[in-house]
Structures are given as C-alpha cells and as structure tokens.
Length: 69
Ligand SMILES: [Zn+2]
Image (cartoon, rainbow, N blue to C red; front, side, top):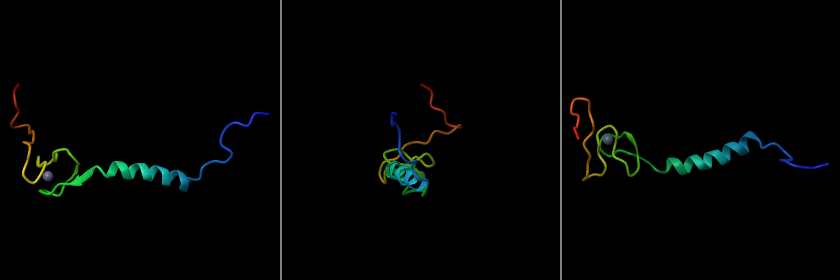
C-alpha cells in the first residue's frame, strides 16, 4: 500500500499563519503618502496627489489634462 500525501490536514490556524507571513512581506512595500496620507506603494508615486518623495513629485494624470504623444 502506497502512503502518499499529507498524514494530517493542516489546521486553519497553521495555514493562516503561513499566509499572513507572506502578506506581511507584501505589505512591507506599502507606504503612507507624506502629503495627503493616502496609502501608496513604496517606490511608486502617490496615485492621489502624485507625490513620490518630499522633494520629488509626479504630475497626476487627470481627464482634463491629457498628455498627447
Ligand atoms: Zn498623496
């Protein structure tokens, strides 16, 4: 008789711990905008006000002001 597979099913707590550990890594790359307080991704410009750093900022694309290439 072949014994393949997990002997015991992982408990919800154990699965949740593993998943939360991965989520923590992902959430570590998220910052709060210093300008408007919006949650934004690290190393990315704020989607709301366009602030990337305290000194540097990016223009936010709006429907009114479309840039033509
Ligand atoms: Zn902002």
